Length: 587
Image (cartoon, rainbow, N blue to C red; front, side, top):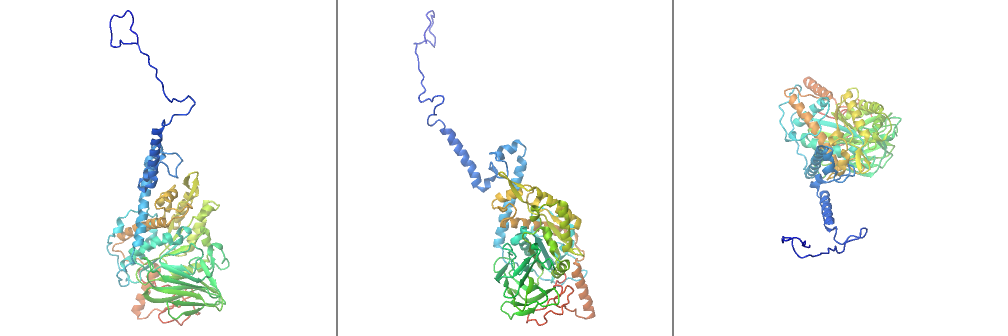
């Protein structure tokens, strides 16, 4: 700076005139490269952010902070910013909270099953007497558990709950039987097995139930039973309509045939809590023209040969009783003609629950109409169930047709199974089925249509209804279940994993028990309600006792209990079965 010539005063800024040259060393040309280190801090910050985001995917409990998941549009930081801006934050948070509950439930359910010990039988009371009244209900610790989805029209299950009450109270012979039909959603005994486990733990273990004589497909596998197929049977699965002329598919939807050599062995389980004991076996087979021989052997005892020749096709049963414990039953086609058979029942005589898994893998709902009505009713009367459960719809999502047509088909199937004196029935809605929409997994549009159609039919036909789709979390739930940890949904976006089966089975169990508890509390002091067949047996027994006349026992065979061609010679310890199973008062 230079001091002006006319300035007589020296100021603070007065000084010697100096010039400075400022040079930015290494400065880039306008279009040239940036110098080394220019973006070091920015890159470091970005890498730190990426690592922080990555940790949310590596640490399960930090799932809430994940900026992106496959069920949403591909927008980074959508969970943290986008949903808040659009007012969806609370909904997303609630979905995550519910999913976290389900994940924890899955872990608890599976861990409990792995540690489960064989069930302890309850004390057995004397048979219930006519007019006997229900006592005060004693609260169970399970009653406080959260019920994820209640039953609709639960009052339709009154007689089922009456049977369940007799089982829980321990009346002699009080066996509650349930037949659970469905498509691949119940395959591998996943959902039914989970329900059976819980039902038997609380109400008593009355045995494994019905098992086919072979495997119609690789997905037919039951829990709580050992199955060995030494030589396979030829089989005819109902979904193929291969018995179009007669419609005799047996209770489980598959008929098995052999001219000789086919052999299977069913045994009680040697691990886990379910199926460890049995005392009553039934072989379900057919009498037919030119029928061959069927050889049945319990453990190492002398086998019994059953001649299956008959003038016409008819239903037959052969029963074997033994001491309650571990057993194996072998069924073999022994030649002299073609043998036709259906399956084996494994039960116990103690009060409790039997939950039959009747999966029809790959079946459209309407395929169940392939049954001959009289044959099916004969089979069901023999089984004498207290409840029939339907869980179809998964395969119907891949067909063309109107919902009106589907409602007609579903109604026809329910009426066919229930018969003239309708059985208590429960409809389980299908699972959520997802499909990929870019990077997202969304619910297929037909899912809600099928759920609503089944709800309408259930209400019209007097069945209880369980909304499985809503219990899973509704729209988009399969996508969330597939990505959960542990995974609950399968990669095909249509089925469940082992953990998922446990969750859905537990959900239905808690819904059923909630209805049962309500029933018990309402019915205190009321007479024990028995199904019509059981009540008739009690009345007949009482009348016979008064007249000092013993009731007659019919031979196995036709639906009315008569079968002149049934074998009379039975090995020691075995009994010929009556037309109705010995389902004593209380069921």
